[in-house]
Amino acid sequence: MSPKKIPDPVAKRLALYHRCVNTLLNQGKDTTSSKELGERLSLKASQIRKDLSYFGDFGKRGMGYNLKYLRESLEHILGISKPWNVGIVGAGNIGTALSNYQGLLKDGYKVVALFDRNPSKIGTFVGTQKIPIYSLNELCDKIKELSIEIGVIAVPANHAQSIADRLVECGIKGIVNFAPMKLYLKNVILEDVDISISFKSLTFKIWGSSHGKT
Amino acid sequence: MSPKKIPDPVAKRLALYHRCVNTLLNQGKDTTSSKELGERLSLKASQIRKDLSYFGDFGKRGMGYNLKYLRESLEHILGISKPWNVGIVGAGNIGTALSNYQGLLKDGYKVVALFDRNPSKIGTFVGTQKIPIYSLNELCDKIKELSIEIGVIAVPANHAQSIADRLVECGIKGIVNFAPMKLYLKNVILEDVDISISFKSLTFKIWGSSHGKT
Image (tube, rainbow over all chains, first blue to last red; front, side, top):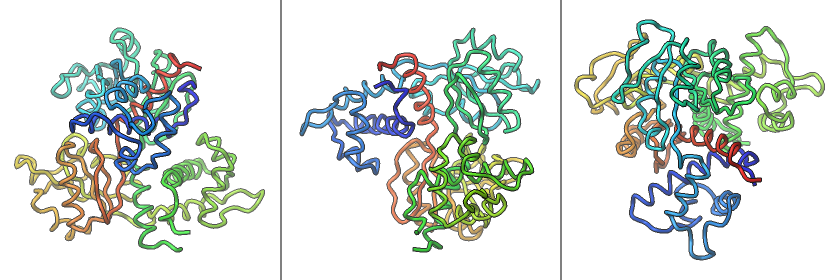
């Protein structure tokens, strides 16, 4: 089955399994089971077995999963057995925070450039990794020169669509969008990160548990 | 039906509907349909009708939804017809970015305090809203004094669990966790925001579309 046909929530869960497998390996374990993964991730064991079965046979019945093999397989499936170069558009708070985010580098996502239109920022460097901030005019040139495959949109909502269109014109392969708006794009893979959605989902549950009707 | 029993993905979609309804109202429209919402959000109209039906009858058959009434209802359901006071633990890059994030304030989430253990940060203020940074020792006192209901965890992963435990001890109602690890908590509502998961979901799709087997 092609990963293109895998439902989006499965992709998210595969990433969760990868993180959990890493934790177990760091704790010195060799094998795990769908039951153990399920307990750690608050998921049903049957769900985990079903998700992993999309990609072949990882475990022997009753024997559990070999953690090293499972990690290697998940890294291949998730495309992180290779490093990815990332460019962030917008060197504001969110762009700066992301370029210092250790969780990304750890998984092979390397922020190699930021882009901004503010002349006072262009030519300066961000964080301990000293990531350069380039002018937005250099976007296409640097994407090619630095082999940037993933573009991150960290600009205000009213500029997000035009930046996204430019990233696509420059041949970017995928976009992670932090601007709180829906983008209309063709021929590129898009992932939205909407922080306020998580807050609303949280207050929905708090509100429901104190005011809910049954 | 109690909101507690509503599946998590529905909560996330309700937040998406709310954002879309706001956009339509800003464009001067009065009514919408499940078809229009579906097209804008890449969801099936039947899915939208089903989600909204959990909460009663919003539209007349063939007449569509009244946008103002739908917004008001969604805000009530999502618990954002009231403001929420937010405290952020960790005044690093992510904590600072969040306290300046306009998308939260717009929806009634007001960051009223940051907490940090770095003496050089304590007593200073962040952003245009001049949000104070307090010592972690003041966590419980300030949560009560400032009526903070939501705690945000923006500390390194190895401190996240102990901070979460302290927030629960201080009587917080809900936690939004930005640390890339699974937290074990009771008696509190938790929402995880894992940025690297979005990147992995993206590269899974890029990788799959270029290397996928069918």
